[in-house]
Length: 436
Image (cartoon, rainbow, N blue to C red; front, side, top):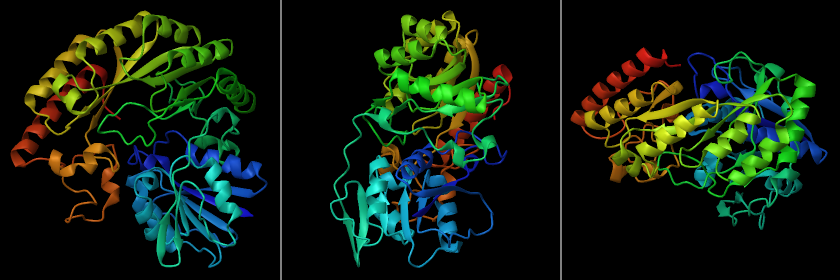
């Protein structure tokens, strides 16, 4: 069977105005690897804004990866404009589908939508491509005539080490081996995923899986040696939602890769690291840890269900630097309840951390579809969601960069948010340089 997997250009979700590539589409890369291992002919096709309609007539099955809500409209336009055989199986999956499978199925006139972890699901779907009947296939929503049926969720894989390496060979090398993406260096690097999921309940985060699954050290080592030998990488960035949760698992990976001579970075919360673990990471080549600080206001951190404290932020950042690792923080400004006082708290904490922080990335709050704050829009006085009667149909507005929309509150709230954001942005840029 010939299968096409379509994904949106990644920089359209992030720094779309700069055409800056970020990490590759791991969802379709893992699915592509599984499909290929099962003996099918798979192609991974990029969908870019304003590109020509795709000719997909040679494929028996076409899958649309709805990797973010911000690119939902882009992918929907591609579905409507591209040439697909009438007898081809049409599938949808991805982050947006995890939250809204029924509407995704209907919007895309698809035969089946896969939600949750889909490496096993995709093979079950392809195995029933001729009958188009997906009863008892866990993790799907499908059309049975005029009726939309939802099957029970599929249990998570017990061992993600069994998965093949992501099918990077189906992409141009320049789409996944990149310079200047690793901690401000010019090292030739690639992105990797060593775990899945995040168990923490932050209200602004669209993580779709709350149970964390780790690969073991041997699996991580195998992938990195492959990337070294085939693509000559000098470093890598771990893009997991929250890599540093289980210290024993992280230590196992570090000890397994410490002799490879690679430099790397990872994301973490401030309350899951300690000096011993950071020392182990440094010895294994870690050169930067990126922390989700989010705010210097403990009242906002509590509202976000981040549930961390200023003291923990300071302790994690200083311990990181003492271990010989650079520290970076992400800050989100404008969460519902943000005002001049909470912004002052963030500025004061950043000023306190100034001697330790190598980099700061400042984002404006966006109510991402599927998050708790999005689903509880009325409670948070959020406007502009697709669940509200005044929905404008514009999915592209949910991008996370350069977003200055009035998302919540009245005009006085917005004026205060705007004014305080400009003060914070000026402080960050004056101290750490312009924001990307």
